[in-house]
Length: 111
Length: 115
Image 1 (cartoon, chains in turn cyan, blue):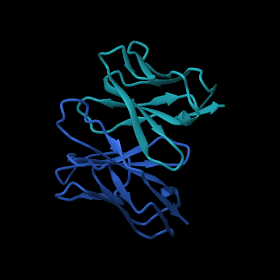
Image 2: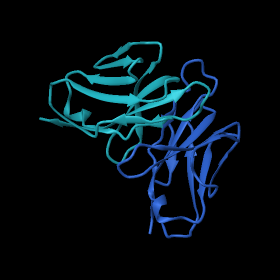
Image 3: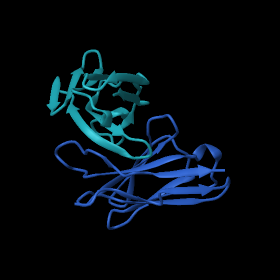
């Protein structure tokens, strides 16, 4: 079956690192994505990783993928107040057209 | 390069009415997907359009229908509105056949409230 799970809340202090976790069930997932959603807005693509990769780094963002455990994480270095938002992970399986989203993790950054 | 745009921004309807939401895809993109995001939830896939044909559908009833036009813009139509249809409706465009990821880029959404 298709299911993507995330913890609901994360609170960090400004300047610390944030780690947002995601687990998925579909072992045939090919691409995994992280999106950011600010209040009242659409989804902004942050980064993605192909399933044959273990890690991807993009400036302050580091994505780690443990395919054996079906676990994906997003690390934000030097978290800023502007990073406060809801973060969604999503998976896509090869040959399909839809993304399966998690329920989102609300990140609150304390000044 | 223009991003994905949606109209209207907000909409209020009553039960039983019909609604049409519009989406313009990002330039260079030929595929449009629609998602429903209920409050506090992640987006749920409704359907996707490619070359003016429905290319796949999620678990939504037939009263949710759509169109794609030759310029790749799209409409989502919902008939016989129910209270549970109140949600943020997101449109995403992508380039099918892209050798990378078919990455979907989202618009700002239309907030539909059904009273």
